[in-house]
Amino acid sequence: MKRALRSIAIIPDGNRRYSRKRSMSIAQAYARGFEKAREVIKWSANVPSVAFWALSLDNLAKRGALEKRILFSQMKKHIAKALKSKEFAEQGVRVKFFGKLGVLPRDLRGALAKVEESTQDNAARVVSVGLAYGGREEVFEAARSFALDLKNGKLNEKQLTPAAFEARLWYPETPDLVIRTGRVQRLSGFLPLQAGYSELYFSQKLWPEFTQRDYAAAVRFFEESEARYGK
Image 1: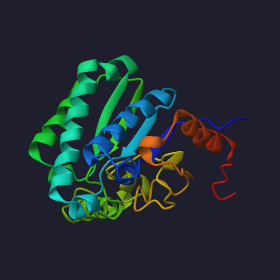
Image 2: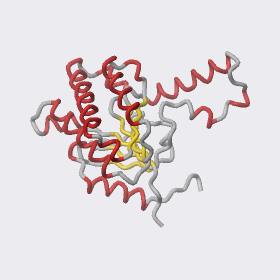
Image 3: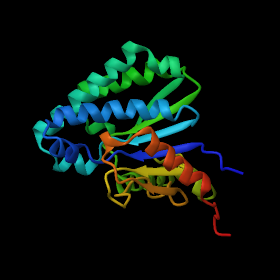
């Protein structure tokens, strides 16, 4: 019997290398990357939860100002395009964002809040997007909030459980399958606690090159894998 796929997390790597490979601007490559994400959302219509890691905290610290402006502009553009087309409503998609969102530009945060608010009643499935996300920072912030609540008497020691801790993570879900494109075979700090038992699928394709056949191969890899969970 095939395993039921309930949750996918995706690291869409390779946009900048794609721009160099195709001798196109980084803006054009990012645009194709965002269109690819929209395609994957459609391909995964039968999966209740899909998450994308769109921007890491390391990206924010190390990418140039021009590239970040281009990326933020593309984000706002494609959010507006998706809302105008009503595709989220038609597909029953609720959109959520996770990460250290307060470090993002104010106008971008406004756009994110708008799409979350406009899709909050869509109940068929959830698409989550990690922005300004880092796994170590996520775990640290969860531990910090736990410690502060314990210190201030909002928690007692009996309430310090793994489930209570996990609920404080920025992304408190456990993906069945993690897909990374771009030929790199590591998670780079993505969902370090949540992905402990996830199946990991690494594609040789750069993100804008990822096809529906590639997506189907990743799903088939998951379906044919055996979940042991320590057995």
